[in-house]
Every structure is written in structure tokens, then in C-alpha cells.
Length: 191
Length: 191
Image (cartoon, each protein chain N blue to C red):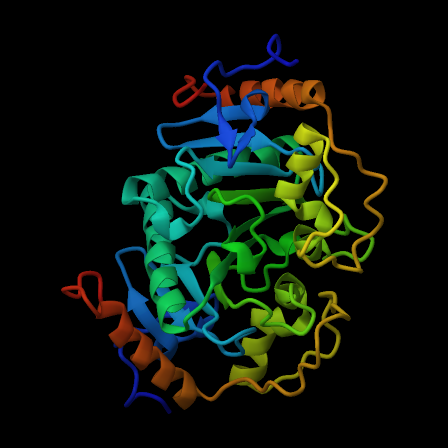
């Protein structure tokens, strides 16, 4: 397993999924992790420490911490991926496309004309490939969900080319990003 | 004009557009407004007071205030629109679909099976109809932009049925929402 490469020792769960080795940044109430199957390079998530499904479930301190973390992580991600912009999106509840019942914000670096049909990123978020729960189930439990109730989005370009990443690949990226988070600072809020 | 119905006296701008009568909530660093052409009923925006384009341009206090306002507004919107979930999305920069260079967060109430093809909301955000800048230009300057560089999203159902709303209609909704924001509270942070 990835025990030798993980940068955070305490176990961290994203919903019911153990994601410890994917975490690259941690604060009092939040953590950031790399993605199992990023929609675009640099696509990361920022989650509340507490496993609750909705933004309305968070305290004032937790909301504050979550979005200051989103701001901080997004600055670093934009810089190191040389992005022009960012999509920052929260699917706050099942009817909004949330597949893991744990508050999380997507941060997706964008470049001009980075997608074949340009602005497909939200469609991709809504697609089967953006279904984090399904992705994690497949990767961690080797189960294929054939009858997902979640709608597929036909305009998304072929997903078959993109396989879920290995624990090791994700841990490596998490270590790299953990290093980037501290650059030019004294490491406050680091892991 | 809507001077008689507006609930906030000081002029408020969303980018270069005067939106005073559409504002229904205001805090130290943020304001919330109803939408000219909501993608779904209850689609509102929360903006920073300062007209800056990117999340990274905001101070710690401004980020904190913005997202506590998003949380508060989203709770009220979800309740009064009897929504099941919310999409909360920020197009942070032009390459991410931002059309008005002023930090703003979309809050869109969602119901199960509320769209013909279910999860089109992000595609709609990216479409011509989600182009806030174009919408405001058309409404406030009576100019039709025929050669937008912004991509159209062909899967969006016909937009022609939905016209930009009148100043009066928006001011009425803003007044109604302003009232809802204060219910059950002592009015802290009200207009």
C-alpha cells in the first residue's frame, strides 16, 4: 500500500472512503486531496473534516475555514498548473449531483480552449466520470456499479481513456502538492 | 424606473451594471441579488462588494464574509423554494466561463428531475443564457451581441422562451427575498 509515501498519519475519510494518502493539505476544520480520476489536470477537492453532507450543516468556523482553504489551495493550484482560471463548484446535495455525502468543493484549473468543445467541464462534473462515489467504490472495492441512477451526460468525450489512478500515483502527487503549499510561507497550516 | 420599489438606497454595481433594485441582502463585504434571467427559479448571486474579478483578489475578511453570506442565503433560498439541493458555483476567471469580471457565486436551487435531461444545470451556466454580462448588456443597453466569443452549449433547451425580466419584476422579488432573509432573526446583517 501507500503507507510509505503518505504525508498525513492520522486516517482521513472522504465520506466512507479512506483517502489518507491523497491528502496534501490540512487545517483545523478542512483538508484538501488529489482526485482519483481528475476531470482535468490539477482537479482537487477541499472537504470539511466533519463528515456531513450539506453546507448548511457546517458551523461558522467550519465555513470560514473551508473557503479560506479553497482560496489558498486554488491560488497554489492555479500557479503550479499555470492555469488561466478556475472552476470552483459545490454539488450541495444529491439532487445537485453530489455522489459522496460529505461537504466538498471541486477546484478545477482551466486554460483557454482546454476542452474539445471548450466548456464541457460542468457536464463532466455531472457525468458518470465525475461521480466520485462511483469512482471510489470501483477503485477501493473493485465493484462495478452497472445500474447507477445518476444520469450520464452524452456530450462528455470518451472516459474509457482515463483510468482511476493508483494509490501510489495519488500519494506521489499529494506529496508534491504538499510541498507546493508551503512554498514562500512558514508552513502555517501545513500537514 | 424602480426607484419606488428598491430596498437599498446606495447604488450597487455588479461589474459595470447598476443592480441596486435587485439586491435583497447586504453585509459588510458582500451582497446578494436576484437574477436577470434565472436558469432555474430561485437562482441568485452573491457578490463581493469590491469589484474585483478573482477569488484570489479578496482579503481574508472578504472571503469569510462572502461564503458565510452564501451559506445564509442558500439556507433561505432552499427553504422558500422547497429545494432538495443546491448548486453553488463560481466561475473564477474568463477561461472558466466568467462573463462579468466581479467575484460572484451562483446559488441554484435544485429539485429531483427538475430539468428535462436532468443534470443540465452546469451546461446552462456555460451557455449563452448563463452569460450574465451579455444578459445585462442586452437588458440595460438594448444592444444585442451577435458575435459573442463565448461558446454556445447545444444541449441547452430553447432559451427563447425565457426573456430577461423587467426591473420591476426583479425589484419585487428582491423585496420578497429581503423579507425572507430576516424571518426568525433579529435582522442582523439586513439591508
